[in-house]
Image (cartoon, rainbow, N blue to C red; front, side, top):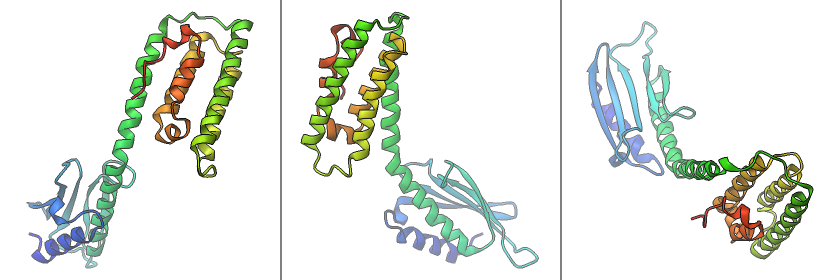
Length: 239
């Protein structure tokens, strides 16, 4: 079995972390063939666990061969690890807690991205009845005029709402680039494809918290600039 000294050291490492302490975890040990499994599980989500096989005996050179898994790891949700020093055990525990904290901070963002993708797909499903044809010259002219007006409206919103233009320069550049893409593709993309492109871009603008700070009620602006037959392909509002 693992010595009490090791368990005490593990608790000390857990308590030293900036965001966690030993009360956030459950530590268990289980005797196995030629070693003991040391398992640490995060109380709030048992998907997050560290499992290490602590050997019962040293190798001929006097070193100990540890092996196990981290969930999550630095790159994959579960990663295998091997090392041969006790000190590395404590380093791996700290690394594992850092990965948990990173996962906890990133998870809401990932969920929001997945939700946005799901919402966009639902909207795009409604576009299946759009005619498989190109825009006429008159339609291209009308939509180009409306997109130019949308660009001016968004620029006005940016100038009004942005205090530090340097920090938001990239977001502004992306917004204007999206509008230019919409104008250029009017001449080369069929109606169904262009409308999907438009819906996706408008949705992206207003669902991104950074963009929302810049363009304010840009969703309503975009809807207002569309011909009536286009408005039906957008939701009434975006929460």
